[in-house]
Length: 167
Image (cartoon, rainbow, N blue to C red; front, side, top):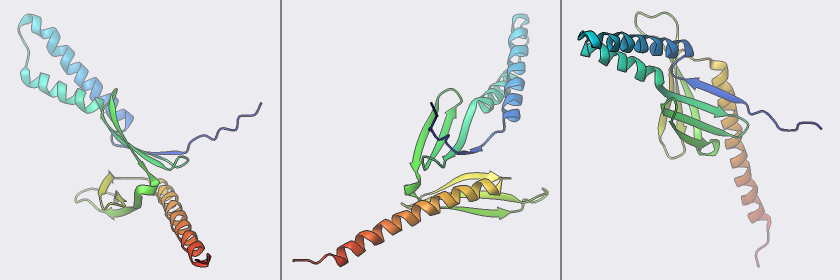
């Protein structure tokens, strides 16, 4: 029996790299552990506990975009790593994805800002860092194909109305 299911092609834009997430969790956990173990001696620091909580929150926070080319959907996940809030946008509701390149003062290299413009006029910033331009191009092509298909369907419907004689 042959498996005919097509594997979804997904392009990811993740805010925190995995090594940064693990580092933040490790540092936050170490600060918490050291302060909680010192509490029995009466020596602890509220400020250190606050920094530990901030590091743990940074390590557990999720803010990422997933573009499913196969299903023509953009999915945004925001919130805690275990319980993220998910928002799905179909490619048919996206007008375009624009890419701007810029340089930051005192930093080497070129940075990119990726913006998604919806049909209702909303602009959503997807990424504002060093981004792989090849992946963005693939998403832009998929959205252009979707928009051309909508325009072609509209044209064909209008042409059918014009060519059909009215009584």
